[in-house]
Length: 259
Image 1 (tube, helix red, strand yellow):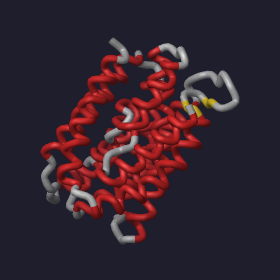
Image 2 (image 1 turned 30 degrees about the vertical axis):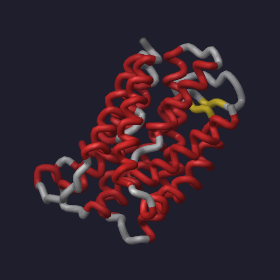
Image 3 (image 1 turned 180 degrees about the vertical axis):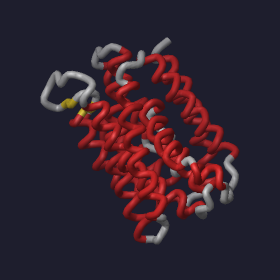
């Protein structure tokens, strides 16, 4: 199990750094497989995988945010506007997710995996625009992004990046600011998933596996930096297509775990 945690964390961090895809795409299916292999009930395994994965993203998100900040790719005006509503949305999303049947969560995750698979296969350069309508609903956008992250296990950063490009931020700045907003989202999700279940052993708090969190976070932080470097040296256009197909496979496999 230790080796699986290490490999899962390394893969999640590397692919997140290379493709800009949240590590939940890898971490959640890996954790579901481990927990079900230990005889855990499907719903319990899925909830625990969601909570642990979202907690892991707090550390990888912080690493990415600091890197973007050092490169001047963070708009702190928008960061401050979205910080609180995103965290609140993640908290209530986690409370709801911890009470939904595991099959519903698996379907939500599969939809997001399928969406990102399509995005990688047909991705075009995202452009910026300045929409007064989008600007007016910043609190709604923050809340929705946080709730989406908790309920689907991934996708919060992409929702936020899309929104920020629609209020006039350049793409690089939108991505950097979105990574910062992942921090309150992860904290909200940690609290929400942490307080909604009993603690059956010393290495678990609610629906967060602290043992997996420690190992996978450390591995993903290191690997994410390698992924960023690899994206500049490898033929990422071809790799995106391969990984897009891989994510479709994960979507199907995730659905099969609850059928």
